[in-house]
Image (cartoon, rainbow, N blue to C red; front, side, top):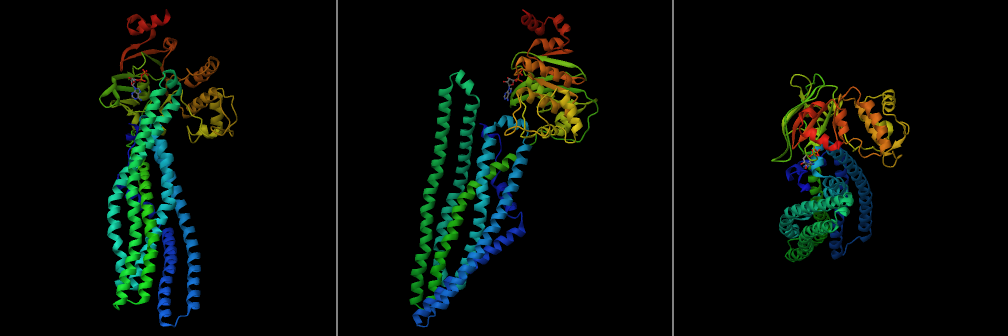
Length: 574
Ligand code: ADP
């Protein structure tokens, strides 16, 4: 299942990361917490004033006006402090969030191509959209509110103790209840939300597949089956959502009860203490009000714990993206020479099922080699390995003389200067035409760019034109030319062509072949041939059958050998 391919970080990793996240800007954090603490402290004066007032009223010496004015003053000061405290925490939250997003983009871009291809896009897209959204709620609201609630709650408890430890005790009756229900809830919720996210990823995958493969679905009459898969995914998602809902139906009533309990018991027990002369009326009044005031921060804390769980599950999935092991291990060696060699190469997409069974191939610098063979024989796979897109399971693909350097030991930027894979897939990035080109070689000047555009016969818009989504639309032929121009700029000595021209209409294809000829000039070329005339024109032909190179030689040699190639050629000619 695709959602298992991209890893998920462990709870310990998530906790460690969250800690670093909170402490990332210690000065700003101190300001935020300091302001909130000050605001909370101002709010804690009122119950004491009210307590004193009640006692004074009983004693018949109350000065209600002064007390009222004092309370009003504190409330205003508190309001102003809260405003600045929230401003400061919002700024901090946005800053951390922006950094998180940038980090996630870095992580995604660092995921090895082979993993992205195997994992499918659904999971990655869900992580990039839904998980980033969830996490941003956590960072924007849950984290600051939780910190604030912790500060306010802590100060309220301190005020309660200062007011009188004895009358403070009844307020604590709810603690064991809350601890128990949270210990029951949190681990279950964590697992539940992870399952919920995975179920969403599956729905996303299924829908994407159905839409992208809609022609196939229609042609093969698969609509019914796609429906069933969709229904099954939704049913599975319904089940896991029911589970987390079930958890909440236990959590919320217990929480409600825990809020009322301290207020009621403080009032009752406080009353008893007062009657027995163990507490003053002022103390009991203040304690009851504090117990009431505790509800808000505790409620906030617990509500956000739920949200933080969601955020934690999302963070685990986002961090997981970064823990895909790299499929390249740059070694720092510099290859000497341009000869690409495959030695006893094995490759498998699934463990235990090799699709290449010990391929040996020496490319001669400057030659044009055509690869032919039945569909599914392993030509594209071999092409990807020769281009260094993937590494072999066993054996090696190297560049350079005397053993050479494995392609997977070259940093990506260096690799592209040696060998490149050209397929039908090419992307026009959103940006100017210049940006679309210099990504192939960062130090390219406008003169270099003008030169490569001339080489591919460019007739499209100018360098500063915005292209890609939202910009000017390039025709398929122009997009191809752009991809080729990038190649010329990267200037690899070896090219692997896989179905490079088969999607275009004949006129565009002819044009493209002209540009391509200019690009290929002087380079080593491996062409995966779907039309045999490509093989006829090549310097050598390699026949790939069932994951092995079974014949290798010139067109004439292979015809003379009367093997598979001769048979293919004969059937193609007839
Ligand atoms: P060719 O290019 O000669 O048609 P391929 O290299 O595409 O052959 O495929 C070789 C074998 O590897 C086939 O059996 C194919 O089903 C399998 N294969 C190719 N791509 C994948 C993939 N992404 N995942 C799993 N198996 C694959």
